[in-house]
Image 1 (cartoon, chains in turn purple, orange):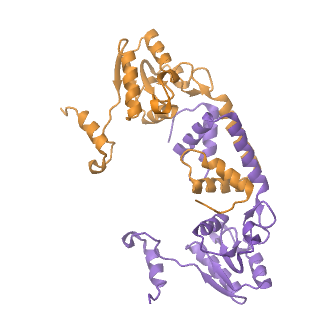
Image 2 (cartoon, rainbow over the protein chains, first blue to last red; image 1 turned 180 degrees about the horizontal axis):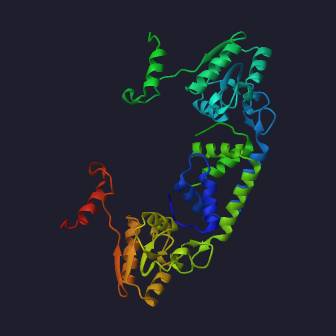
Length: 201
Length: 201
């Protein structure tokens, strides 16, 4: 849509930024112009940080969270309840839950959701490792924290069926987000909120 | 505010992204996680683009727009009216005006606004070069396109005083933005809109 001819190296840089998730043409341009104003050392440090993060950050062998060691901070933390595992699709979901500071157990990052449309079957996800983990350890509860969508529900159901023989399996609540207006909630959310109603007293 | 301990190389990369303008902690995290998922070659290309843009993009010697050559695309374009100069604070303002595709003249990027609070005096801006440019060439009109703020107005007034001996000096209109609701406009904008009223017929 923007038809302005940028000078080539700038256009190239903008194109790179545009590929980032959630970055539109305007933001990409703003970021690129910011780069031009920085001292060369900043750019070099940034490039180094990019490559270092890319090359050194891998997955925790236990829960598949991001880490640069073999086991992640959460798995290693003796204060976390090792008997409750929260199952999430991606590391960013784990981070969102950590921000809520409500969960004191440990995690299992399965790396996506079952999606026949995108040819993602359970074998491509860390589900086998989850079953193994649950069968070999003393786990009191598995909390499924997957997004409320066809894929999320399919995946939750699939995992629940596999794990119920070993332990209690629950899922997080779906309903109206805090501070939202009932009037503007979509029908599916409202249906889920009704379905998940609870006694007040 | 986010107290989650990221693994070090990831935390470092997120910190870099957070320094970008308009990028908050959440977006920085999203961008960093995106980097981890890219092939190494993409990261290398991106690093190269960063350094290349940084090292090769400079300022047009005539109008101080961004360019990797001595003179920018706009100044070199024979279809642009070389007798009308639009004065902007930053290259991004020039880009915004170019997107509007209304202006067919050339530019002068002064590189900021006069701001005694930030110790930015006119000598730090490309104002001297503008006066020289106007005095030495046949310029029919200077259009000041600076933001409506104390700094923008001060700078406009300063430039107008210097250039009026040589040519006609105008400024872009301030008023209600298109599609906005009068009800929600701030008082200063409304005052400016009233002050700038025009005959309809």
